[in-house]
Length: 79
Image (cartoon, rainbow, N blue to C red; front, side):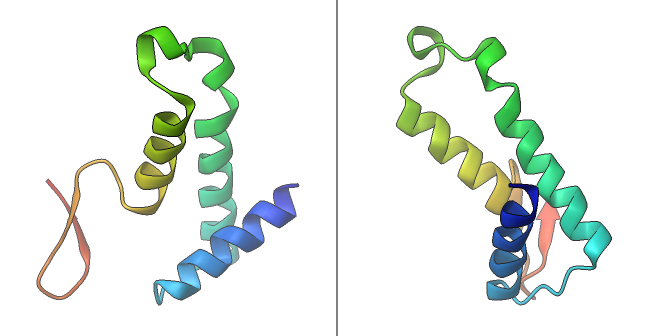
């Protein structure tokens, strides 16, 4: 499933006009796996909200970032 996820990350990056190297694609794919794989160890709907909220947080953190904002030229900048 790593290759499937890597293709999804690649397709998403191309939609955003980013041409990532294979090393970057591999890193971003494993970063996504890392966010998802440890959920079982800490996640509780009572403490952390619904599954839908969790999915939205993972998606937005991976696709937009935690504190990123658009600069005037469209590049991401950290707050």
